[in-house]
Amino acid sequence: MEKYRDGQRELHCVFVDLEKAYDRVPREELWYCMRKSGVAEKYVRVVQDMYERSRTVVRCAVGQTEEFNVEVGLHQGSALSPFLFAIVMDQLSEEVRQESPWTMMFADDIVICSESREQVEENLERWRFALERRGMKVSRSKTEYMCVNEREGSGTVRLQGEEVKKVQEFKYLGSTVQSNGECGKEVKTELCDKRVQMKPHCWEGHCDYSEAQYC
Image (cartoon, rainbow, N blue to C red; front, side, top):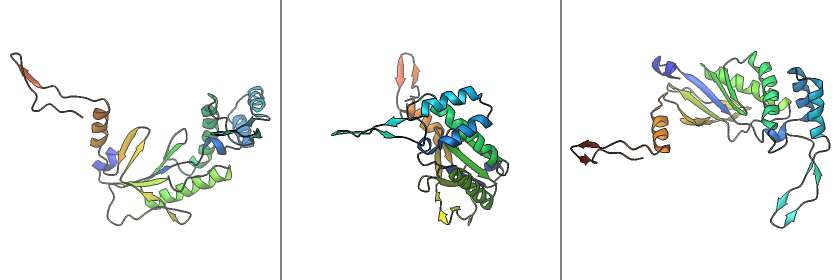
């Protein structure tokens, strides 16, 4: 982003949010992606055994429900689930990246970038189609669009005719990304989070606290 800021060039970014990402992964899609990724068949069968006839209950203030079958999604709280989800997303992204190479991913956090608004809109639609074809869904309310170094009249991004929320900053993987390409807010946030105090000026056993700053 610093490169685009320094060159005064636009960079269009869409931060894609998946709706109930782990809960929507189809089991058959998981087996397919594991095999396509080269996972040995014996390990595929081990995971299948873990998911076969899986049942759960819902606990509430007045007790819990009767057991019911869970036929879609990954197990909540399992240490294996993030790895299985990564396998599914890796295979999906291989297909989409053939057309949309400029994409950043970490687990279910997806960022699509392009130098033009039209292109990033096309890439977003490509991701939506690929995800929903596999039973997953893009959250319309939480997916957001940001333009770095925006010129007047750059417009907005739409997803199936619905306008994507436009923001001036976005927190991605713990870091604040700003539309002006600056990182000052991120630096200040880091300092405040760590409660950094500027040292006072001291001489001959006396200290001047007038310029000392606290977050």
